[in-house]
Length: 191
Image (cartoon, rainbow, N blue to C red; front, side, top):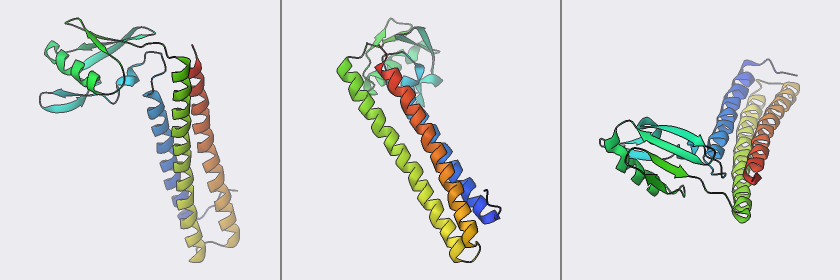
């Protein structure tokens, strides 16, 4: 039931790009949530002052995971060790850096049951916000498609086909967000 009107294809393609970006943003935001398991993505939003510029920590240091509950931050320039430690402390990720003079170690504590439940609520709220974003993209595309019909570029049948294509697209991206939510909830509740 795909629509072969170039103007509609353009609208659907533009909206699909927006929806893809929303799904990618969902993936990125979920990755920065602490789940009791060490992952370098926890440091994605940490910026370090390095020679007068604010740069991501992964550009001034190698990030490693010697075990499931530890992240090691090994600066390429040992003189930046203090700045990295300060940036991690100030970032609000809730981890205390341990500096041994060469490497910073971050131990990820186990989450309490109460904290796990709070995190699940946070993840559900985030995913709902992303679903709303996808629905807003759908509404925007629908308005453009209806305008095409109003301007006599589309027939009533083509409008219905375009609306169905748009709904399928929307359902697909909402399903992807729901799948990521289920995986993240399972990861959070894992002990």
